[in-house]
Length: 197
Image: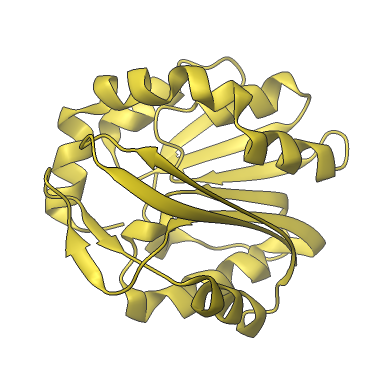
């Protein structure tokens, strides 16, 4: 993510975001499903880790986790979780070849420009070990727009997202849907897709 206005919101509201996601983070059904499919002692990338609750939960489950986020304030919070390797990075920094057993991209890539999504998905596929596990969560809808706080979002339909995943080499194995209030207080419909690389 490189949108300055979006980053400014996350930097200024990092603690508020942590409070919003803290309790749900360790009980998230999508995270539990991801953990259930991971091999023991996996090497995982938490892409757009936010305050690091999911990364911390994965470490407690016995995995090695690299947590990346473009927000300096979010990385400061993520680094407080014991055992989490937290570092500042943008989506353009995605790299490596057959490095990770799993990639957790939970409501982070929704801030990527639509034109860049195919490239990012291909790079994540390359970064995964063969057959590795990939989770992505996005908001459902179409187009791109800013929310009431100024964060820029790109919205996808289920069909479009699945098509992008398959084009990048992923095989979707599970989907889940829901609607929750975000940091701006507005309800938003979402989709999560779990795939093999």
